[in-house]
Length: 369
Image (tube, rainbow, N blue to C red; front, side, top):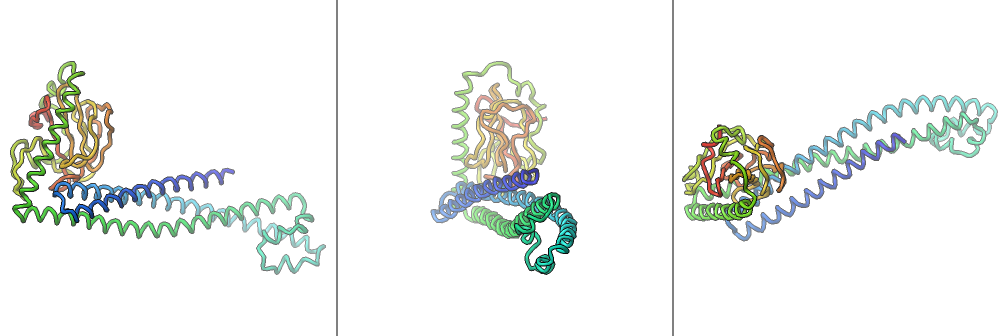
């Protein structure tokens, strides 16, 4: 019974994870279809990049999940191999014992000695004969049924192990395919950005799109600010901690607050925060306690988290690879809210970080220590 429970748990877990993997694959296929449609429609650069970034993030997640499932299946194969080896040893001992018992029987049942000693049937098949079960003593019957149970487990484990080994081979092929697709997606994004760098008309269009994205963010914050003012009470934590706030991540500031001209694309925009170049996947921390009021993709900012500090201040974290908080969640200072990524970024992995006071952008460097 214990063996059955263990095997049931293992197969159920693998089946559930496979279902989640299939759902992720379906979502990824949908995003790739949308990317193809955007290419045909010659849609705006920012929207195109945004969708490609979504595809890249999903592809990375899918590859990670494939690897995790592969590890689970490989561990199961190892467990099955150990169990099969134990059963083989156990059955060999029992098989020898049963043959000795049958040799004793055949001495007074000579008519069946050829079947017992030279039959092509397996031992469980021979012993299943009603004739032999009738003449076997109780202890002999118990030994037989234990042997039969071990034999069934042995066959089941071997079959499952073979299926998993075949699946592991397919996992390897799937990962190779997805890694190639990931390189294609990154190459596509690079080609789009290279075109922007070469063509003045593309630079102008991208500049307009970036300003449009900023306006939409302004509208979102104004809306949240109006709703937030109704419950705003108490002193400002962020203002009191001015110059001593913890940095949201490790890295190097590559773009400061204020008007900027992108060094590669020559686009002119106002940076409402700072851009911190960092390693992909590094943790991003909340700089102060507050409430998460936005945690989703946002055009021009990729995966974005917006935290209301309930004192007139908001902090914004953009270009995340992964969001680790939910809307409405109360968080503490230093809480990990996401991972460094390049979603919506025009310059590789980085964190776009902003501070807003009463809805208006302020220089984050004045508040960080």
